Image (cartoon, rainbow, N blue to C red; front, side, top):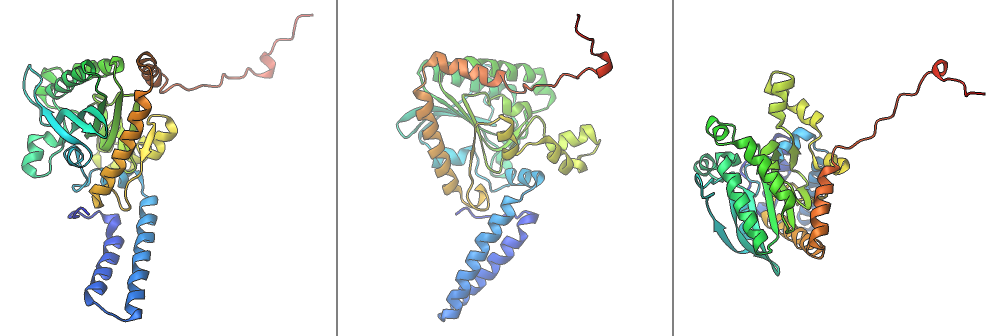
Length: 334
């Protein structure tokens, strides 16, 4: 189990009960009453954790998605895949560490993995710009995806970013244009593409590697056109309204499944992915293998056409025409 360092406010009752349980177990009582009390507290702990995590508000889900102990792309590269061979650089400007790319093996499939990386330590996070990719990161991912298409390797994208890097240098090097180019290219690639939001799915930074045949997200991740703080800054002129913005944006897995934005939701371990990296990795591996088997059986022309139609149909809705008043209804001709 992953060692948890950072505690969220709503998790306080869970940690208090865990502390009681640890204290009781450390006492080492051998009586039947002591064993019964330990079993009772364990059941109570499971029930309490289930209750708290089943009732999370959107802003609390955002906090879980940002948890500093939540597994990142680098963790899944070690726990889900075998023989990962990293590929670097966009052959034009540099190597963006906010996006990792490379060939790997999962089950019997050789795949190309593309994923955002936030970094574990402060030094790594600064080097990765906290997962905010520059244009060279997306150009790197596009080159590697084209390479995967050439060799017939399916593509797996791990999305975990608050958004693309917003600095002046990134804008000068064509941030918006390269994200659009990446989305267009992914829409036509003749190889299966699976996209999975593992933490934050923020803005165009997520969309840059988010167009696939199957788009899924972890249970306590979020996927949004803008971060709650950014939305609050625009609508309420203050980031302090981020909680209200998260509620209004409908960014959780439950909302997005209902809206048809995502195809699947991968259930997280009890208490979130940050509490058990190995179990979360096992569930992701099962999901990826199952989905790869489905996609690899679909003829390529059909796969590309269905991918296009999938995104073409997003946002379509029917609007009821206004009924004319009775006085305006003309009588039929005699």
